[in-house]
Image 1: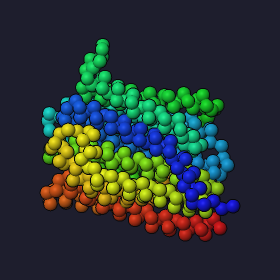
Image 2: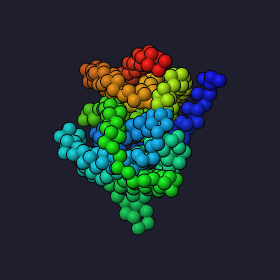
Image 3: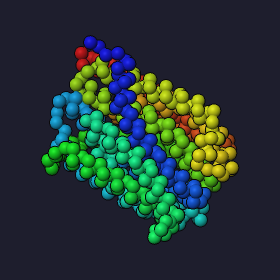
Image 4: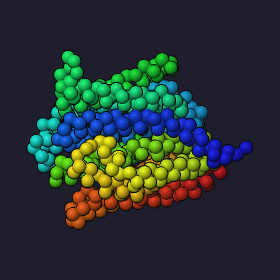
Length: 439
């Protein structure tokens, strides 16, 4: 008996709910950093924002490689292959990526010395960036094991850890920054140390869970496994970096004009990212379900999971857009009471609201392509959309038309619509091709 779309939607939501919990937890951990930094000082917030804008490109490049684990393994499971032997190789892969990410993040420090930021911010930026680099090991370990379990559709515990991390992160940040008992106030250093502590704790907790739940053999995986992870993950890494480049270039370029723009951009990013976690989680669920169906060569399931996932993502983001447009000042005041900051943020929230549906569309379509292991078009679409169109148009509106950060967001919002269109056309082409191959 053929399943209805209602069943496909229900399956995706059941798989996505714990993932949503985890992604929101991850975003709220970042939001906790922003919240505590803002309470400490506007300069600290600006410095963390600028450092994050530069180093997140490196950090997320590694994440892009690691998130290839779940679609690669779900395709193998769909083809009735065992994947337990890939557990330890997955850990080794993640820690190798973490080592190079740490070195690259540290290498960003002298680069930021020459980008023209306010001199008073540079000591904060140097300290935060150097210490934050060590958080890559725990962060990547947690991400890799979460992806491994996701292929098995084991999603509750790894994402529950992220929820616990929200509260632990705020507490540790506050204690390290402002001091408590025998712990002295450490300011910006405390923010960075908290990031290392929380991410390491999350990674080790998930490692212990996996070792208790499964009996693994320490097998050296073939080079083919690592090659497949890189082939699938590299375009995802490029795509993630291009998207981050588009958004974080706003903080970097406008931060050179005035640090308050970097602070405003960081707050807007956190607000927008919180809603984006829902379609991102659904995208992960789509990738797993489509990957399993692709391994089994089941075109009907591939098509229906894709349509169901896109519909849920776009519908949710439309609702978010309405809330952002109706209550922009409320969202801004969650993070700051600085009137100048709020005056910058509120008008931009209307632009963010306008393009929410396109964000949901392009994100869910990326999940379909990830499940099909056809990720090159994701990076190509992001390059054309975010770099050639988004940054170029945003820079023109920001600097030539004197719209500042507001102009950047118009350009980036328009680029998300272009990316969604490119990915939709690619998926329609692939469906036509698979219809012939799988028949």
